[in-house]
Length: 115
Image (cartoon, rainbow, N blue to C red; front, side, top):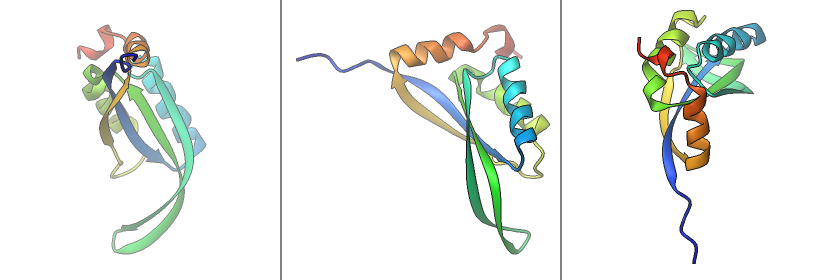
């Protein structure tokens, strides 16, 4: 019987924006700063209550895959450039295969996350 694959923690940060230009800006800023290994983008429809009224908007969901050590600077960068008054910033810790977690960690620059 084979041993199960070793698992390691990675962090996933999720946010949403309204336009393709906003997607490109937030994805490029984070990747240029080497605060995430990758950014996945999905078109979605959001239903929510905002300022007392029901809303339905087409949005894009950005999912950043990063090393746990990069969470604070990643969140600060996204918050500083996010177009929404109240951005969704949801953080999850997930278990990934050791090989994938190592790749994520290698893509996130150590020097960028010390600030």
